[in-house]
Image 1 (cartoon, helix red, strand yellow):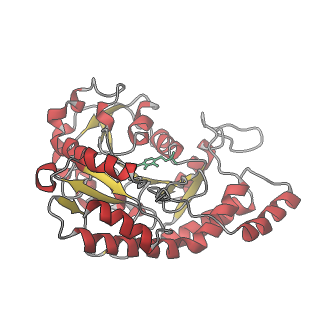
Image 2: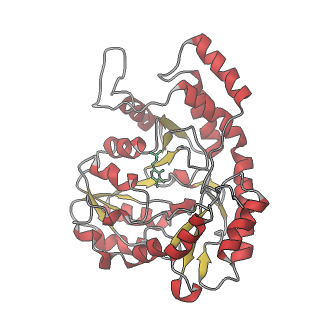
Image 3: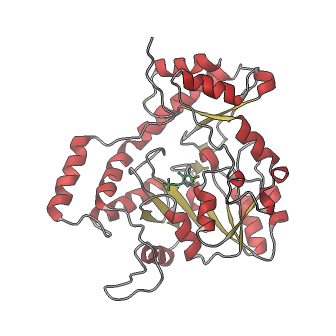
Length: 368
Ligand SMILES: *Cc1c(COP(=O)(O)O)cnc(C)c1O
């Protein structure tokens, strides 16, 4: 029997007729980029939805990381996590900053706050943690350490769209937080991203930086880059914002089914929801203990792949093992045992708003 392929994710797509209404308006206005009507509208709508005071839209989720580091004049060394997508560390490299990796907490996958202080040197200027899989970091602890040593905190919140802790957006933690609206994320604008900040002056500075540093027709106030979002993708984003809650709820139902079926399976573990947290179910990682499960992570991963079920080994290999970074003192595997273990055991199961009961059963039959 020929089985259809089940992909790890599937993009949330706007209705074409709805999109067409916007496109006709954009076409007739002939204003297709440069802080147009829909760009402004999407910024306002996202502030409201995400419960954040200021946001600046970007053309992807990597440039806000690079721009936040620029805007805060971060230099020297930045403490970060090896357990993330490569863009986190690349953004430091693009600013001539030396990444300093610290290990993760195995109970969350996030940077272990207990290991931050030992990694601080006179050159340290900031901490760049990641809310991995949308699970909130211990932002209070991290802020206490940052305040004690006079460090900035920039969160890579690419996975944390809409995540709240006790009713407060996780995006308000730290000096700034970045989002990715890439096609593979919970909320997408095809490609896209954003930077969240606390005050109007910072937003103004970021808005200059993402538009070559232009502060007026003839005035350039900073060596900015071009990372603006256009009107077409802003409109696409406005439509998707209206259906993202339903998509997150559909993901939640998938997570419930996975947990129910996998809880009794010896050698397979996963994360439960955290108390007080509004999750976005952006990923569903499982961890394979080869000895207890009787099969290695890769054996299970390739068995699923052969049957057309495409999980992903996020985040394997660790960033600290890539050629650019592996020579760093902090990248030594013995410095990062928890991250290596998680990277060696993880499979992110298919997780999106269109998985059917039949899909879920097919996936589970391969694991249980
Ligand atoms: C997706 C992602 C990014 C990069 O976002 P793009 O929009 O693809 O540039 C950065 N950090 C993390 C953790 C991500 O998952």
